[in-house]
Length: 111
Image (tube, rainbow, N blue to C red; front, side, top):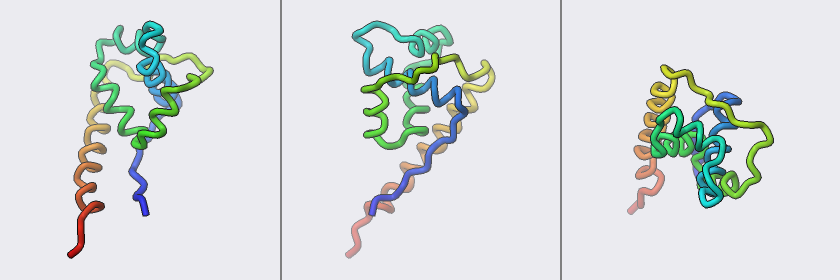
C-alpha cells in the first residue's frame, strides 16, 4: 500500500499562483506566463519555486496534470510579502527533508 505523503498547506493565493507557475513552466515555449513574470520580478530562483511545488504537490502525476492545464481561471497575484517568502521556503525545505528521511523506511527490505 502506498503511503500518502504530507502536503504543505497553502493559502488560496499561494495555490493559484503555484498552479499558474507550474503551467507557465510547462508551456515556456509560449513565452513567460503571468506567474513566471511575477517570479522573475520578485527575483526568486526557479529552484525555490520548484521546492514550494514539490512540498505542496508531492505527487508527480498531479504536477504533470497541473502543468498540462488548463491554468486556473483566476489570475495569479504574488502571494508573499517580501518577508514571508523565506519562511515559506524554509517550511517547504523542512517538509521535503522529512520526506527524504521517511523514504528509506518505506522501501526497507525485510530479511
